[in-house]
Length: 151
Image (cartoon, rainbow, N blue to C red; front, side, top):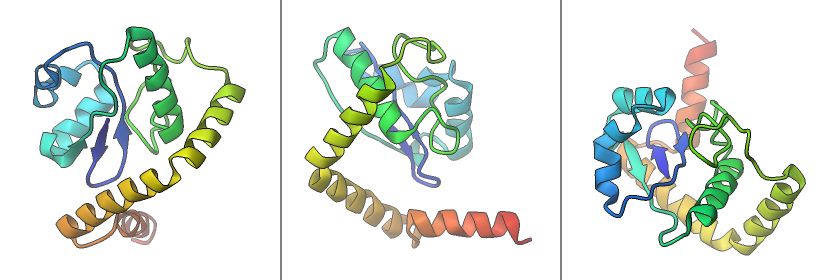
């Protein structure tokens, strides 16, 4: 998972590479995803937090997890993320995705189960963002919207 430090948008993907740095290649490993690669070019590779969510999964487990995380973070919506599809086998434009009812149930259960952990992660990155930029991500978004619509 990659989170843009400036706008909070995310990219979620899987890799079978043992050496993750070889896969990432400081962003050049994402040349085929035009939206995410354009963001890397704009903000720089260091403009993103890079988080490994899971390791040691089978391909089927990894693709299922990828679809769940994309759904959870709405990463396939350009307002929230850079994913071009709903996940699965490469760039499938959403042809293979989980049952929406199952996903809603899964997300609801996941949020309840991981409520404290998620709150801690959000606090950690919010504090890190505020430390680095002197403003919270929400404040940054409000400022961007204000500048966009009140010129």
